[in-house]
Amino acid sequence: MSETPETEQKPPERESKLVDGLTAKLGKDVLEVDIKPKRIKVKVKPERIKDAAEYIKNELGFDHVASVSGVDYPNDQELEVIYHIAAYEREDLRDLVVALAARIPRQDPKTPTLTDIWPSSEYSERETYEMIGIIFEGHPKLERLLLPEDWDDIPPLRKEFKNPGR
Amino acid sequence: MSTLSISVGPQHPGSGHFRIMVKLDGDRIVEALPDPGYVHRGEEKLAEYRNYIQNIPHFERPIVHDSSNILFAYVSAVEDLMKLEVPERGQYIRVVMAELNRIIAHLYYMAIYGIFVGHSTMFMWPMGDRELFIDVAQMISGQRVTFAFLLPGGVRNDMPEGVKERAEKACDYFEKRLVEYEKIFINNPLFERRTRGMGVLTKQDAIRLGVVGPTLRASGVKADLRKDEPYAVYDKLDFDIPVSQDGDSWARAWVHMEEMRQSMAIIRQALKDMPSGPVKLNLRGQIRAPSGETFARTEASRGALSFYLVSNGGMMPYRVRLITPSFRNMIAIPHILKGLLLADLPPAFWGLDYWPVEADR
Image (cartoon, rainbow over all chains, first blue to last red; front, side, top):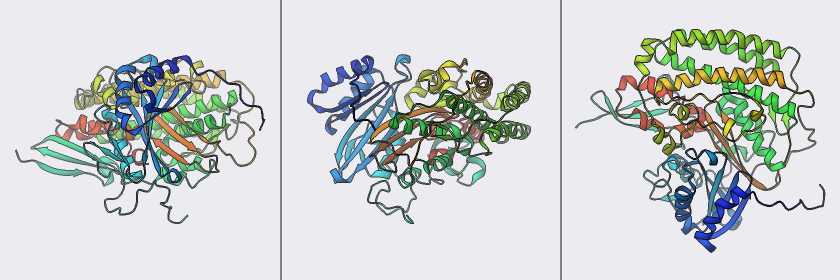
């Protein structure tokens, strides 16, 4: 590993432009922006995730959710919910993926559902609910999807759930 | 109105390892809800207990007959974190394996679709012809189904002599066979009557529901990650994306058929244009992805497949989120089945190319 730092690259222009409007709208509620070619990650305050989602859909034109993920960070006592959002209608955006993320407390893991903005997130949200225990408030059918009906343990993708036999 | 509820599945014949809870008014489906999970393995959790190399055979399991395409997305994610540049010959061989797998998976689809609409010749023929492409893939990788051939940094080994000739022979033969498939199956009046106008998904609905792959392209959206976000050497190859405006079950079968033609064109070009040189990087010791996160996606045979990989710099991934095309297409099941006759469930459902093992992960 070389010690020299990587040459500072300017973030790609197209991607930066897309984010600028969002940061202008949400101001300080945008906590983190990470721009790479074709990939944008925006972390917002959990109470503003819906506003950010509406902007990404209506103003930027990203029309469907490719994936909803939850990541457990027990050291911070937080869960991160991440929506990966992509576009079909706008052909110039098809190579882009916007990740919209928010950190919510582990003790009270609630976040508003985005199914009313993107119906395509329905099953992904349900899976995230059962696997990592994030409660999507307002989801039309927040029920078990893949786990057995009689599962009575903690959500299996939480870090304190140890895989039996390992 | 009194309705009758029945379960289609989860016994295998009829639905795969999967259940559709159907509500009927007489013979009409008023509601059809998918009930997945019968073959859920917890792939994402198990991946946190395996290092980056052990995860290669592990991640093939959800889609055994499309194993190169699912690994393509996985190794792309690892390479993105490790900032690896794959040698060009390795990239060409990856594309050949990915397209062979696409044909193998599409033929499987044609066979299963054939038998579920009661066309047993269409079960036998694709299952037989599939062997030709499996043989080519076996020649390259040494395995018949789960090739475990793509590694971070390249592919496991170079191709032996004679692959080009063998592959071209298979393609020559199969191009003629596809014409026969069209005559006996796609353009068969009985098949057309069973599938034309059935299970229609409009373009707007396809976009709204975020469906992927042939289902999306059969609904008139010309989206394919091989063109939209070209990975490996797809931007150097000349091929078309078949699109239909019909959005029905027939169009889905037709798109699969045409995609096999395009895949053969890609295989021929890739084998012709392939430069010589190394096929992989020489990575020594344990592979460790530096901490960070990445979202990699590829066009698998059933559609866009994505890995969201979070690493904390350890030997094993911190979190892997795998979204498969079947999981994303599941949302279309209630939509397209509603309003159909119960007897029309198999032609509409199997046209979707929904694979329970792939959806459950």
